[in-house]
Each structure stands twice: as structure tokens, then as C-alpha cells.
Figure 1: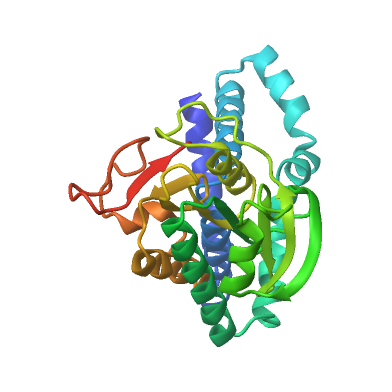
Figure 2: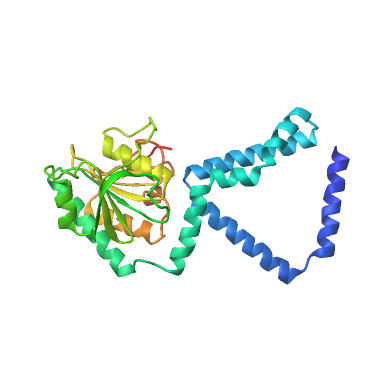
Length: 296
């Protein structure tokens, strides 16, 4: 076996020496490395990342079975991996669609930086006003991943995002106050939407139905969600299955801007605590700091 591996290594080295062209191959390697890095950053913190780790583990087991001639294991994995392209398309269909959407939106942005900043300011103002009155709210900001497959019901609105409109929707007398509001392309597109609830059981204390819905949609998509608790009036931000609780207006504004501008791809970057991704751990020791939790 060692002789076989050594022979294979020598053959690869000889082939490399014969065919390697420094300029062309360096550019080729750099482009591939950049593409791989971009894809890994895209799926980081999502379930697609966990699936990818599982596929890499299966491929590693397959290579080991080939080396040690484990016939049965090798046959089973060979049958499975022979349809790898189809498997990848099925497992990563949402992420492939999200990647293509990101490329398209990068070339043709639908919302300017000024309009995005104004939209976020209206959401922050509405959240602050609703929190003071302890009125529950659930605002979902769509990013690259389309939310059509994740939401049910909903009433079309198609209006400019404003603090007054958001506040009126979530008032207890409103027929739409129990559902979520969806913001798409800088506009309030739907209200009264039903979101999938998270199936995670290791949730922070005091998490209600709105928080479970926010976690559920962010575990499946790259949406950014703002939640106002009806019971406590606490404002939370939810992103990629993580929840940051106890936010004031400046902290919420800063967090939303950083995520939508691409400066941050997870909430835990806000705390600076290496262990901040664990459930129920506070981001800092001060009483007015945001608490960050992850549902995994």
C-alpha cells in the first residue's frame, strides 16, 4: 500500500513538472480559490455548511475504503457518490439559487444605499415605538434568498416602509398584527405572513412564538429579522439562526446596517466573545448589553 501511494505521488509530481505553466496556472488557481472562498462564506452558518461537512466526511471514508480495500464499504459509497452531481443540486438548490441571485443583484442593485439606510431607520423607529408600548412585532427583511417558499398566507401591501405604517399594522386592533411583515427590495410587500417555526429545543429563556418563527426562517434563508417581544418589550435581531436580545435603537441600527452592507455575516461578530455562540450566554457582563444566543 505504501509503495502504491509513493508511486502515485511520484506520478503526480512528474505530471506537475511537465504541464505546469507559472502565469496561466497561478491565475487559474487564484480564481478557483476565490470561488471556493466565496462559496464557503455564502454557506457559513447555514445548514448547507453542515451538509457539506457531512459530504466531505463520506468522501474521506470512501478514499480510506479504497486504500484499505474495504470492498463492501467502497461499493456502497461508490454507488452513492456516482450520483454526486444530482445529490448536490438537490441538497444545495436554495444556496445555488441564492448565489445566482447575489451575482445578479450585485450587477443590478434594486435598492440604493440611501434608500436602504432610510428603510432601516424607519424599522428602528417603529421597533422603538412598539417596544415602549410592549406591542409585539415581527419584521422580516429579505436578502438574497427568496422567501416565497418559506411563508404562507399574507396580505399584499406593496407600500413604502415607514414607522407609522409598521406601527399601525402591529397594533392589537389590526387584523394583521399576529403575522410577520415582509420587506422586499426596500418596500413593505406583505403583512400577516405565517413563518415556519424552528424545531430547535435549546432556545434561550423567554423566547415566544415570534422568536421561534424568526429563528425558523433564518435557519432556512439568509433573511434578517427584527422581533419586538409583546411580553417584555425587548427588541431582538435574528440572523442565521442566532438571536441578539436586549438591543437599543443605536445598537439595532448598527447591527442591521453592518449585515445588509456585507460587513458582517453573523451576529456573534458583534460580541467579541469567543464563546458567544453558545445558547444563553451573555454578550457582556453589563446589564444593558445585548444577549446573543444560537440555536445551532
